Image 1 (cartoon, rainbow, N blue to C red):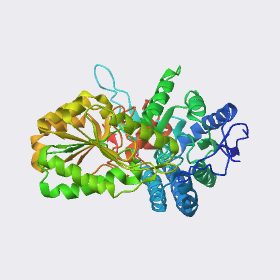
Image 2: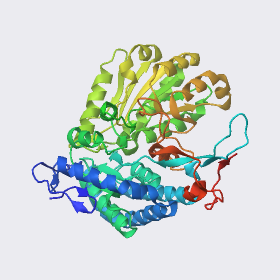
Image 3: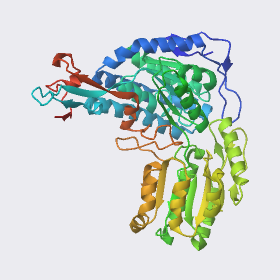
Image 4: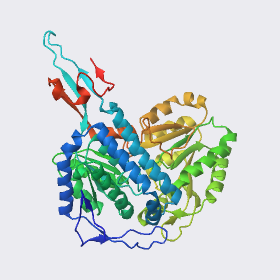
Length: 516
């Protein structure tokens, strides 16, 4: 039996147990995992509180050393991850290896960001004692950590959005202790990575409370964690209902805290009239690969495609059906996701004006396959059910007669992670109003490329207005993710030797600063 990690300690709860499920067979796996008790949650929060000031005082190089140590340690675990992740999640070995590299890569990205140091956004306004009618004081500001952060592991990214994933990495980079709530679908993967985190904390002499890992349900452990007064922010990737529940909990506290939840997006694709007929095969090949990647279990999966009607639309539908028929069933991450996929397809199929073009029969266990549905723009605009995400390898094809009507789509849809346009450069000029409207709708606008891949880099934005996220001003991927767990602090009138190094007059860290 395995228990929670409470700093360098282990939990002792033995009454409430659960097991992960083999996503291929549907059978329970062998290991029992114990739900964290309220006392254990309180202990994790106590350790995080004690570690908070120590974490905040770490230099950028100290934090970078920890992140690089953890990245190396994670890379060394790849064979063990290959042994356990496919059983818990159904993900194939190449995906496990790729996600391991992505996760260690983003740890190193934040390490490099810390070594450069400019992320703190140091700003200096020097004193003007002779200014009239009133003297101007010396003011210096920079970003500082918010304090302990609760992170909820995602079901669809057992590494990159889980224990040592982007939320945790960016919180540690900001100087915050992290308490992770493991996902019930991949507890063994969480433990393997969690033990590696703990060893890196020891090796780099970080405070014990820099990390804890808790097992248990979101409705009990998650609720207790988010409402605990020690927690200062929350990172979450998952369903709209789950993210909204955490958001509401955090805002019901006597002292509300921010929740950065990445939740729901249909990632619309707009095929504009300028896309040549001879590009159709290339487009359909790319669309099928994007929609079916990972059995459609990406938050950037293209769920709705708006396309010209007529002969072009008929050819698109026929070619797309041919491509998707060649894609067999694959394992979804756990039974709950597959059941939700089936219910979503049933709901969408029953909508007035929707016709099923292709629907694969479900297989055993968590196996599921592609689905294509079609409708027209008029019916789409009348029925908001069609606007909702169906998490999985499904595509709703929506035909239109006049591309000027696409602005109505942008007005009808909720916030999105991405919006993609396919066509000619002239199309962008012709549809400038649509593009301007999409800027207010999505976090990432894409031209003649598909949305599924999310590059981990400085410029990427993985966020968007609600319900894509609960805070459309943020990103959960890339360098900007660190800003979620930092807040500006201004130092007025301080002696130079008492200022943080980032703000000292001599600029000992050689930062790029805003000075006046």
